[in-house]
Length: 490
Image 1 (cartoon, rainbow, N blue to C red):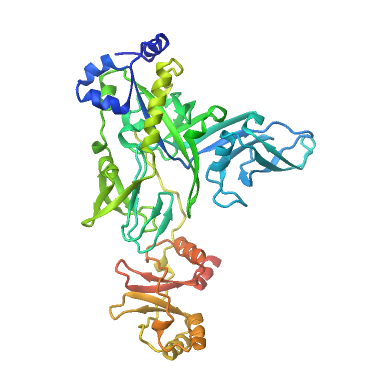
Image 2: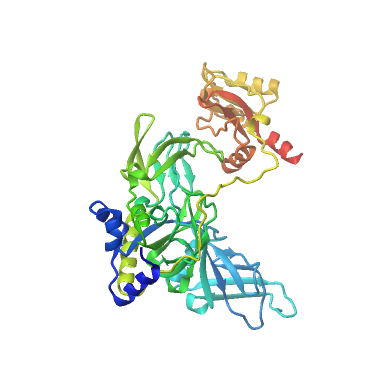
């Protein structure tokens, strides 16, 4: 057995043996774990991917006269000002109020890249902080402290995503094509830090890490830490970070986010640690979940290994489906190699954790008083077929006092929808049949969807009704904005 202090002494003397996680797997294919402990002192790991749970605590210094922030914006991105007078927390996923495709992540990248950002703040106007507003511009060097503190980073592994619906979906897992058109996944698998120390023997509170080119620290388990889906809470000085390891991005239809590079050195203290470092992508399992079903507990399509995901294709329902990563293996490999060089040069010493992370933890959903679902509020749908005449459809709307008629085939499968507005336009166009005026691309819901999903779709697509369908697109009913408004009003 070795100790971290013994390894640090080797680092100081320039005698340490450091290898990357990739190199260690090759070594373990030729040596036993016991033999590897004698040969290798440190193994570097790495990950580089979108880490939404990222932000920075900023101290701006006092103005003259002084101000206590009530609200504060950086490049029109609002930061949280409920702290001390001129402290704020800027979240990476907070969107700008004026700039498209721009958010807190971009402000953080701009600061690290040496750019100035516009600061605008409103104050309370107190006796000790009389100023009520300020506008100025600041760069990273103008700020006293800018401490990156990320509540959840470096997932041990991540569930992959696909989409069974017939609609294109914009999600935090990227764009998901309809009808199982693609699969996306995150994480770097066998070189990712927590996969190489699954029992958290060397990664814990106080572990020194490589964070965006700077020295950072693990300050606890991350939010939603639930091994084998472990996460880390980390911190580091933004002033020491390098822009190549920190890149803002924007997920269409979701929010801004930020790509971060994290590398963690694992000291090879004993045979157990050495054995864990031999893990391969084929041994790391996750599941592909279906984002086409808008529920918290999304259906699992199948279990896969990271080896399958990294191959670029998986099989779903007998069909080959393309797979693409949201993480950069290239950058993760660079991080491992850069961290290896820093240790070999004596620029990076290891630190022992002062407390281990939890090895078991359950992740609970949000507590809700009551979950109302669509079938609780849906009404009977009056359906028609597409060869029906316009006058007949108009008469049916009047007789049944409805404004929406789902169009179905003879088996009851949804083919389109006609509204009272469509009927009015049909008169002007002198259309004769429903097929000429119906909307074919219909936005729908399932009966077990929460009503929040129905409300969201009505608002997003600016429509007033949603046909309720089953998995085979058979019409079961209809839910209208009027019915939902009455329910929410009660």
